[in-house]
Length: 380
Image (cartoon, rainbow, N blue to C red; front, side):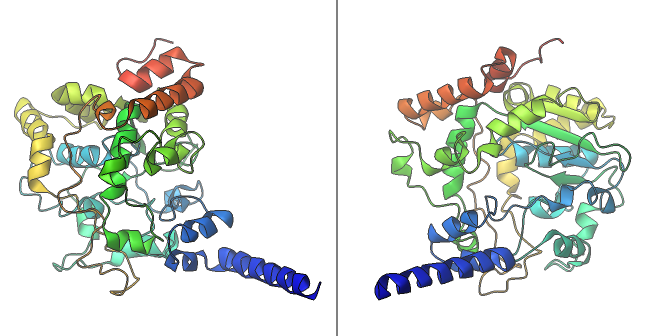
């Protein structure tokens, strides 16, 4: 009985400690080995992934840092986000930034407020650092994301309404871009994406996302990345929730909802459509230049997509803000094909994914078809 009592007391004490850390200093969990780090992070009520936060988009916060005309590129994960960030930058400069002087890295010129850049970071601290950080080349970071020549600023997000207050009354007039992609292609791309992170970034966030061996990509069981984004996974918001939520806002006047497949099939038409939404007039020469620069071959050549975190304050023991980046060099801009996911994942996993799509979207055949293929929205 004495031993049992001691064990019970120890368990209670441990639970109190874990609860206290989870409440006051959850970032401490991220110094533990994976998956214990993530188990403790989630079990104390914190959302996944640990590097995400949505504080910037709160109704009472968003107007404190945005301007009229700002664009939020809120595309789905692995659905052309970096592509659209670079492309909308080309549109706002009308293709004039030919040497990418204003685009040293996607994280600098088109900031990502969702991303917590330091382990214990918060939005209030990062908001200030967006305005005060000096880059290694001596330029203020603000001069690149808030350059006076820009007709609008561009910010990245992976959230959907209501986290993004798309239809809030009053305040700043903001535009939103949403974009979906064939789900099997997203699942396959997410699988390779997990392994494209640098070990430095992975260690910063408690071992997440885990590395996935290429030999397991086409296993009979879903790879870890696919498990995470399936409807019962910790990242279901990445695909299923994302599409269902944005679908309800597709006809809002300040929203352009695109499908990856449509833009891949007709890049010039996509550039023109986006420019019209952004109220940027392009002459035929500018349209040609921008279309070429928005192509996969050009983006692969310029390689401005290592994803640096210049706001990080963890120090060189964890992160060197001047040198480190979280995507392995050369691993981010892929071929970006349509319908290629089935070549990477096993037939069993593909069938499981299609069943999940039918369960989640099947109540609305038009939504299911559009999510898979793109094309025109159904007439109301």
